[in-house]
Length: 276
DNA sequence: AGCCAGGCAAGTG
DNA sequence: CACTTGCATGGC
Image (tube, rainbow, N blue to C red):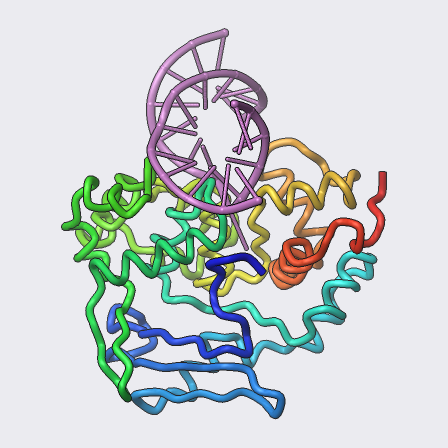
């Protein structure tokens, strides 16, 4: 764990899913956590279905694990994080958040989201708790680059404003790509400002249900170099196709997320030995 | 004091 | 298309 990281699975995670999310008509405030005897949640509305959808509870984990290749690193990741799911985040918040994540540490990106919500998001009170939703695209499109730089976004500030504007004007929306073939959907998402192929992969995987997506960040590139030297290292497109093949095709994103967490939370000497 | 972080846009060849 | 450079900021 790192200082500033999001709450652990056994701590309460609190959030507001806004009315700009296709799954709800009005904002739903909820908190959720893992307990020894199962999942616990409290919500401002009936939210069983929403939560199941948001945390991938109905994904067929046994089939998914069965489809993962038997590689020492993958096996170790499954044993370490059995039950880990891919979330289905609200698409707009996911897109704008991952724009902020470029060349930034996970913990700091998470803290930035809290600040963006605190500064621009709508406040929702529920059960003695006051929470702020991630702001709508309309609100962020009205923010100034300077305001966002003051939060520490650096050069990403104009990217967020410009992409929020694309959404707010109706010119382009992350959910527009639903139904497109994977690589076509990825290319389409790069029309957003500040969205390259890596961030596009994150949105496809963590918001739009493309479980074959494998975001090629610095961690996954290390994995390829250390454990999968046979994967063709050319363009992002080629490397992406190679690692998706090596990680189980349709469910490669599930493999990626298990491996990603194993790498981030395991001292190097405790990882399986590399190939080369 | 560098080096790096869930990269991207813009410019050049 | 492939490759290079500049870019904000904070933690170690």
